[in-house]
Each structure stands twice: as C-alpha cells, then as structure tokens.
Length: 358
Image (cartoon, rainbow, N blue to C red; front, top):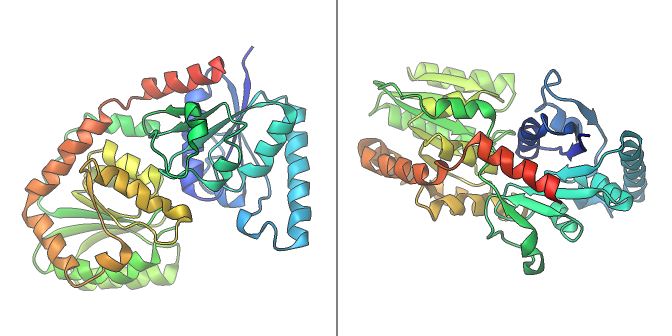
C-alpha cells in the first residue's frame, strides 16, 4: 500500500517550485498532496497538482499581537484535522512560515517529518523542527547555522530541477550574431534591477549588438516605461514577469544578471550559463549571499553586493566580459564539473529510498 505524503510549502517561488519538483519525483510511488498559502498558489498549476490552500502567518509578527496568536492556533487545528482526516504518513516541509503549524501538527500525531533546505543557510522554520525530522535534504553538508549535533540527519542531493530542463542538456546552442543578456530578479522581481541596470544596458548597446531578456514586476506602467526606453535605443528585447519556461531564456543567453535564489542558481549552473549574482541584501539570514558564494568558491560565477555592483566601474566590467569571452568559457567548464551527476533518476532514487527507509 502506498504511503500518503503531504508537502507543505508556501510564500515565494523559492519554496513552492522545489515542492512541485518533489511532488513529480514521488507521485508514482506515493500518494502525494501539496498544501500552500495564497502567495504560493500562483506558482502551482492546478491542472497538474492536487493541493489545498491554508492561511499562514509570518514568524516575524507571531508574538506581536494577541490576534495573531489566536489565528495561529486556528491554523494549527485546521492542519491537525487535515492530517488526521486524510491519514498522512509523511510530511515534507520546504521551509517558510507556512510549514510551521503543519510540522507542529505532524509532530503531535507522530508522523514522519522530512525537511528540504535549498539554501546554504538553514532557514528558521526548518531549524525549529531539526530535532524531530528524520532527514534534511539539502545541496551541501556545509550549511550555515546548522547545529553539528544534527549533522547525521543531512542527506545531500543534487539540485532539484524541473523535468523539462533535462531535455535541454544535449541541445547544441545556435551561434548568434548578438550577445544575449538575461536579467532575473527572482519570483518577485527586483526593483533595483529596473532602476540601475537599464542605464548600464543602454551604454553597452552603444558598443555591442545585444538582445535583452528582462524580468520586471507585474506593473503595466513600468512595462511601458522600460519598453519605450529599449525601443527608443533600438535594443532588441523581451520583457516578462513570472515565466514558467524561463529555462528557455537561460539556455538562449550568453550571460545572466540575477538575484541569488537557490532554484535560479541551480538552473543556471545545470544549463551552463555564466552569471553575475547580485544577492538581495535583506534576505533572511543573508542566505542569498551564501548561495552565491557557494558557486563562486567553485569558480562558476561572479558575485557582487548591491552597493558594489551599481558603481561606475560596472559598465567596464560588463564590457570586458563581452569582449573577452574566455572568462565566460571558463565558467561554463566549471559548471559542467558540478552538473554532470545531476540526473532525474538519480534524485528520484535518493528521495524514494530515503522516505521508505525511515
């Protein structure tokens, strides 16, 4: 008889997208369900996944207002009833505040709890349940803020990637006349990229034939503004907000300028596309900076803090990269050394075997 698995996720795409990938890996050998909050629902295809939407509360405000504590108790009992009613055997948390009441209810019911941590810093929600978790799936055994006494619970896996990415691995890139740059601000986009990068792109376009893929916020006024700037400068471009097939843009690009969400960096490395990481300065526990440095140590990318990247010499740095493609080629070769072991079947086997053994 198949075990029933609930994957608890929510918030940003950084939590939800890995949850959907885990779902795909497990669906043939387990009965799998997703739960998320309203924010996370936008990243889930209702035609592909069975999921339930719950309310959620950010941990930052948990103890600030009595009404919040009352609401948390209601959410906890909703989770408790849902787990009992559906006879789940396993709960997998992909982190985020959404998962806290569910993991608490799972602990009370004696269910097996597994954690997934994509970042190079163990998140606060996952850290709360380390003591009760069977295993913690992550990409490296060297996580910041991870208590040594629980190191035996770490189960390293290759980076979780959407299945469609593996189809691109053996496709040969076409030679293009122009240099293609992709600008990614993450699932929530990045306002500073819109403000600071556009002037840099305009300067580059004076010396090179470039094509720009640019992620912007879902704002019609901003879309028109940036579109007009590129059109007036005769730059070929494509603007987008959230694009589920963004891997196609990554594959087509020569260079990516990006935030440092774990899922985005994993896709860039797998598709061997050189990137400049500009981590979000206010990410929880500075996890984006740690994510970026993980790949920088392997000489796969360039990393700049916001305050350093958007200076006058940034334009010269980008100019030199486009001129001296040997630097880009070196990064590609180093990425190949990391990604060659990442196969769908390899990850599938690790996840399935671990859940069945514990």
